[in-house]
Length: 149
Ligand code: ADP
Ligand code: MG
Image 1: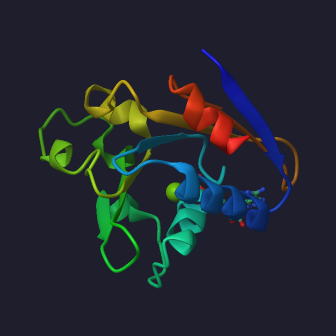
Image 2: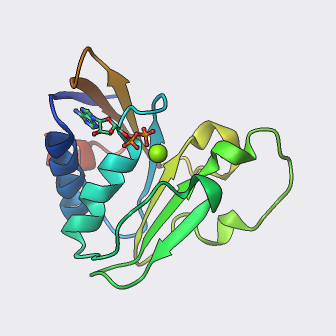
């Protein structure tokens, strides 16, 4: 599988990559965001929201599990599965994941692995010293990867 890598050295640069994602991903895309606490997953979602002209402040949905932003150019579904770690209950998230007219971004996707579609775009963010972050994008659609290069 092909992958792309990029380095960001500030919150602003990570947001900028989020804007690029928003502009290049087809509707219905599912973006799985992998990375430690403080890596920049929510920051990346903020960049996407900005590009979609969503004016609301995107907060970490850790305490709500899911938040849907409907007032932008297209719907943005933001899921944080952290609190679902040891829960085996179906709470109906599958109805929203891959919502066809919008973008779905999922923090801690490994906790709801069975709900992540095979064609999801995996974005891993790793601390790389100070404010540096190494971002790796994996997906099985090469056209999408090329658009993000
Ligand atoms: P996560 O959702 O992965 O837990 P957040 O996006 O909430 O992470 O927080 C990332 C934190 O790291 C923010 O405080 C942000 O200001 C800081 N930060 C520093 N450098 C970067 C960078 N290059 N990219 C993203 N965030 C950064
Ligand atoms: Mg977060």
